[in-house]
Amino acid sequence: MPGRVGPYQHLTPEKVLSATRLVTTGEVISLDLPVDAPPLVPVPAGRPGLRHKPRMHNQVRSRSDGTYVVVNDDVVEFAMQGSSHWDALAHWGAIEPGDDAVFAGGAPYEETFPEFGAKTLGIDALAGGVVTRAVLVDLVGLLEGPDAAYLPDDRRVGAAEIRSCLARIGVTLEPGDAVAVYTGFQARVRELGFVREVDGTPVGLAPGLALDTLDVFGPAGTFALIGDNPSVEANPMGDGRFHTVALKHWGIYLGELWALEELVAACRADGRWEFLLVSSPLYVRKAFGSPANALALR
Image (tube, rainbow, N blue to C red; front, side, top):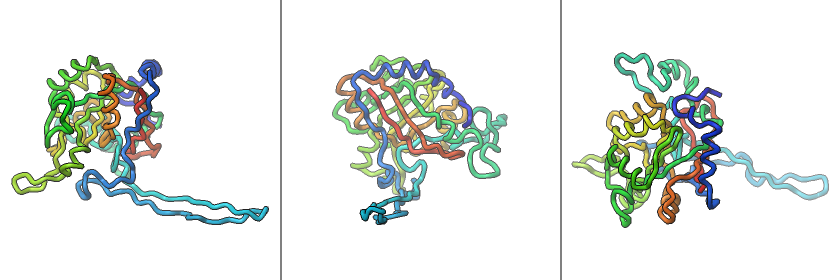
């Protein structure tokens, strides 16, 4: 499998061992939305939903003793980034003046050209698994108050606000940490939907991080930024500068559309905002993303 690039290098055995000490009550919380759930971001703006069909359905086979077995087997087709997922570092590159690199770690355009797939920066780079310390930043509770369900519309949370939030929960970021930011996006979609009319034009709106927050996370050696929204950054994404700086320039993995509601409720209840993150992305070589397959252990 490919070598580790950027802050992923900080996920050493020592880091893993230290993170395991965060588990004190034995709670296990899934951070995944169902892969077969209807897309939160509608097609074609999003990705198509899962198709699930039988390969064998109640196939009855006789046995030598006169009894029978009943066999079921199935096939699925789904978008790797259609539900709670990771973006591989090869998911997003940029061609920029004076820079021969297009992707993270100095990788050129040929990383994904001419054949389809990533040569070194695919999701298989995480096939060894993700086990690290993670921090949940409850942007809704900290910025909007305990009675708020979600951040409004395309609210962009800036670096000063992130620093303030981290100080309020008493957390100092360490190299190799994952940071999950709770915007209440999924509650907002249930109430308002994703696409709303702005000056007569349908626009996909979601709160999220502003570009300058990467001035906090990049120098801290943050391994991953995880959001409950479609892109971690606020929507509309504009020119996608946040993805460019995070994935290409800092090598920070992005996790999107994660299920954080149960986790935020648990953290609010006992005031513990750190947890052990365990994730096992699908080992699909050369792929640009994967379902998260993620758990929070507390």
